[in-house]
Length: 115
Length: 111
Image (tube, rainbow over all chains, first blue to last red; front, side):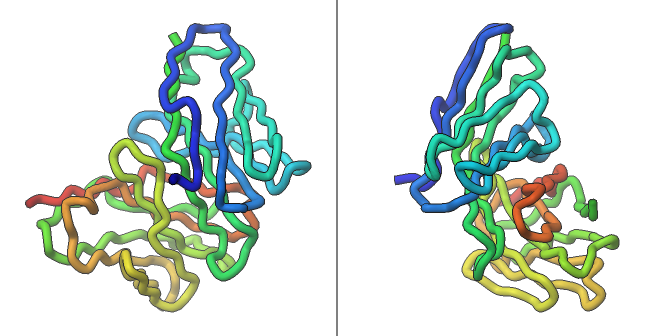
């Protein structure tokens, strides 16, 4: 079973709709992240959370919100989707700094298309 | 932020070693050098990281220049499954800013 799962894997929606992408992890990690990837580019950080009560904006948080419902769950919402939010969205987790440093473990991604 | 420079693409033959270069001339003393790779249609996958000394693991080796301004990821015997985009990332730890991904190097493996 995958350690980091994302649902849905694919979603097509219309402009103005509210969309929620969900991420769950079984690794027991405190830290969780949401990234987006546009075609041919690297990943950009949207939001990150160090624990349930600690949520922080990344470099491209406008138009997005998040919820950390539990240590294992971190959801990303698009309040009113727009076409330029069409992208691949990845969730990631990492343990506190330790022997493995800040290695991040990524989910399989959600492909979102906004028409 | 300290940045990295990688070739856009590289090509190698199956079962041969591959050396993927990365320049990071503005690296700070607290920056770790991380490598991730992204296989087609998958999320990024951790490969290796190091600070000053060369590092080896089951996936690859990381050779770090003495002045730390460059590093090389070494795949000792490339397979078709190693075809991916490889990202060289500088990271100070703490998770404060997440990982900063550039465009990476697209590695093509010829059979």
